[in-house]
Amino acid sequence: MRVALFTPVGLGSPVAAASALVAAELRGRGHVVDVVATETAEPAPERRRAPLVEAVSWREEAAVALLARQADLVLYQLGAAIPDHEGTIHWIGRVGGHLVLHDALLASRVLAGEETAPPSPRVDGLIAAADGVIVHSEHARGLVAPHARGSVHVAALPHEMGRRSEPLGSGRAPAAEAGVDGRAIRILTIGHVDADQLVEAVVHALAARPAFRHAFRYRIAGRIAPSQRGYLEQLAEDLGVGLELPAEVPEEGLAAEVAEADFCLALLPPTSETASAATIGAMLAGRPLAVLDGGFYADLPRDIVVHLDPEAPQEGLVRLFDAIRAGRIDLAELGARTRACAEATFRADAYVDLLERIPGEFDRGLLREIEEEYADLRDWPGRGPDSPATIFRDDIAIFLP
Image (cartoon, rainbow, N blue to C red):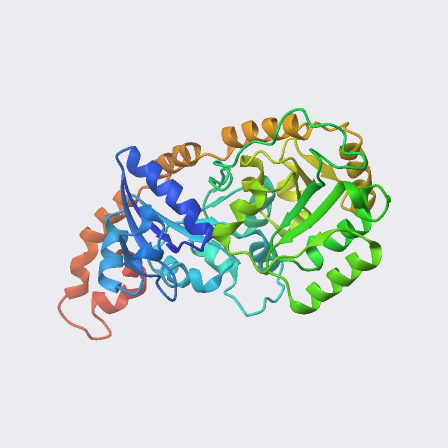
């Protein structure tokens, strides 16, 4: 099988990280992968993911058109950072292919008709232009299906962040006054900090019991506006909560943040995400996790991941922190089960199993045969209004390079 993979290739892109895993697995099975770099500003080779170094720029019109014609599968990776995906937006309506929707926030809000800032292409139009769509949760399938003209497949997002993290120590005692192993338990939130992340609810929950202030430290690793940073620091100081707000952590630094945590929180509203790379990374690192119940998060196993009521997250957090402090939750044991589940689920080999089935349901080889059959119509004698090339121009356009 020959695959034309339209994707960002830079080290800082989480979509590129997933693409690199998929490309490596495809090549390991003997398939040919032609990479098309889709960034507006193409990164230098030393700033690219290893399996994606050799890539054609999306601006190389003739070369990209040839790769698309030769491919058995054309695959586009689409995330939230629009400058990373200009090539996908440019080409999908021209040569078709299957669209992988990575971003929950962009997809759901644009599909709902909300405006984004800065303005972005309508995702529903890109979905309609695709021959088929791949999403990473059943929640996403429900969002996408009304706009798709082809099949909508669900596959678990392949991910590597956290796979190399050391497991949590075993035999953790109740936290009590001294915390775990003589220190406070480290609670971590990853991601862009805004009202959706409910970090204020976490701070208030940690202030609900005097003992929590000694047993827990709360750290937020992600982009945060200066005004929000100042507000949270003042709130934590007023309530006596230990809060750490480091400088913005680059994408490649998130794995180290997760490795230092004892427990992770993913408290975005369930309707905002179709899959969360940060959540998956925390699970792969073997870190116990709490989420808001619904959407993508509702699919996570309930005997492993703590699901909080979206209508009362602060109350749920207080109960959770009580259980952790009292030793009713064995963090090491829960972390080990979390990692085992994630390693069995978020795998590139299972993802490629799906990709290998797609050419059987959508035969691009047949399209190539039709294109070759009708290519001579481009040079049909006569270019007047009554010539076949003019009369059938729109009908044959999709078969022409």
